Length: 559
Image (tube, rainbow, N blue to C red):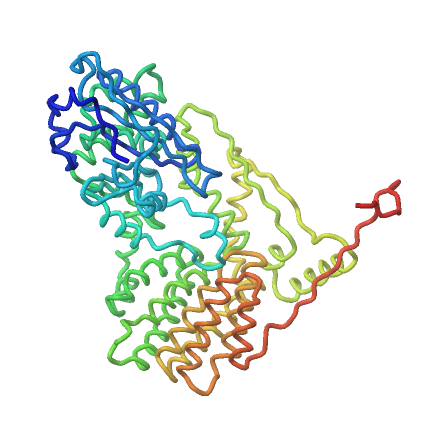
């Protein structure tokens, strides 16, 4: 099957330089310019297609578009196929080109995609060829259901996807289109159109694009024009740089952070490979509590570095153990509690982000409600151990009687003075955190983990590293967080003491991967039994009996 062509009598019409710039085969035969659009649901792929057809008509060119709808949002993008004949209709002498209804693998001039994995999917399907196809792709990812289901980090690595794009494209323009759309207050389809227009793929003038996109005027049209212009200029300037992701710390905060002489000295005393993660980890702990807590982070990291240097004096592993601990220790020390949640939800930066996402202008009234449901574990975590034990015992008795765990559903409007004062008052309870039972419990577990790392490193560098990587098991909140801590302690207590240090390291690595892969813990139990360790203890779960509704028949209905 060959790409659609005009009648033979029109083959000698001047190609307007389009064929040569596209690098297409058959220089003596004028062909339609073909573009495949891939967009997820709600991203405006249909709007982009309509724009291109209207732009072609506005500029006086023949064009056609078809679409193939996807199934749901992540089992396949909705694809739109556009063909434009590169000679104005006025020069065709009454003839009309014949267009194809579907894309031909290997015969596409360009692909524009709103998501990196969808771009790769089309390449794997054979749609792109290195000698013909231009690729315009968003570098941002919308994670698939399969990626989200993994208890650990189930995200696909972007590097192979980007390498695939570069290997199968005549040329490529990789942009963070989602960031551009957010920056200009528009949808990603306008940015995709700007990228295509800036490349010169179609024989249209910029004014043709802007006339159609800006038709009707109003705020939405102006936003679309801004997004179009941003991508147009990026591609025109051959700069396919992605917009930077919002970091945890702004540049100003980082500069202020590094100005402190004591902290700067602490960072500089560590190897260069570890300094960046240490800087971020130290700043996170400092923001979470206070300078004394950050000093505790420093002390712990100095002990880890000493053990790392002792086990690997030649630094063959590049201080990997220190880097792993610096990351996971900071996250663990900044554990989520109701004080932390209240603090984050009442920050000015969060409110500004909410207003930006809602596209609220300065004169718009925006109401923001925060939903909370604190229970006994959250409240007991701020109380001293004796009081916390009594409160938790009372809640367990309630559950044993068939009642639901005690909790208070709250709906707090942070747009109100009283709502914001309530959250800021709770956020100001940081000093109470250090006398609470949750704080003492977390610190004891952290110390047990760090001691295991240092003892493992004394036996073998790989053993210390694998124990350090088990910090990845600590994540989330509630039952997820508790399960992760149980898994970490069980793995360390039962596998770190195997006689052969390298075998212990391998066993811990397998156990960690099993725990991150299977949320139920069955794979982890299998690994534990494989290495002669005891499986995880079975925890009691209460059985709740439900009363039969009054008037309900005692007979079981037949099926």
